[in-house]
Image 1 (cartoon, one colour):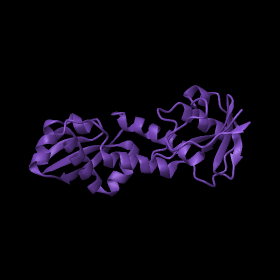
Image 2 (cartoon, one colour):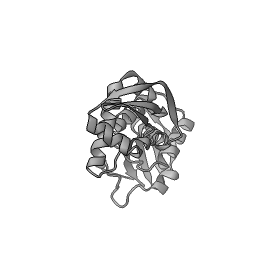
Image 3 (cartoon, one colour):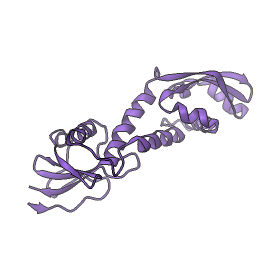
Image 4 (cartoon, rainbow, N blue to C red):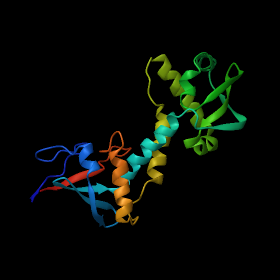
Length: 209
């Protein structure tokens, strides 16, 4: 075997080829190292996985799918009042789809206030604790609408990223080979199996057979 230099963050290439999704699907776990990393063999390449980064990616995409499911919402009673500018209220009530797609159902209260009746279930706990987050999300939706862009509101994305990080396997968590294999299998099914929510690589090629 010849050592293969570790790729830069975001890269997954060895000397001769890239690690593909099919490679990941064929990966067989060898074992855990220092309760931090998973060593596995994929085709003819020895790989090492960062267990926290890998699980963070899996959970991030799971939570994003939940967020985008409009049926996965929590009914709020009493509703939450959020104060905005009059033009922001007008924009939101005239274009309710820009917030409903994120699990937020609004109704008018007055010229400078709206009432929120539903929250996305996946992060409802954080939103219930801090209503200023809701104001930020609504304003980001208005800004995106005014700029004719479509993207996840940054505040929402930060909340999802934070939850994925908190709930992912940590360094120091002992994983069985069965758990490790399940994690790599789940990672192989994600849209971006190569980076965690914060851009850290989930895996590195170590040796090419």
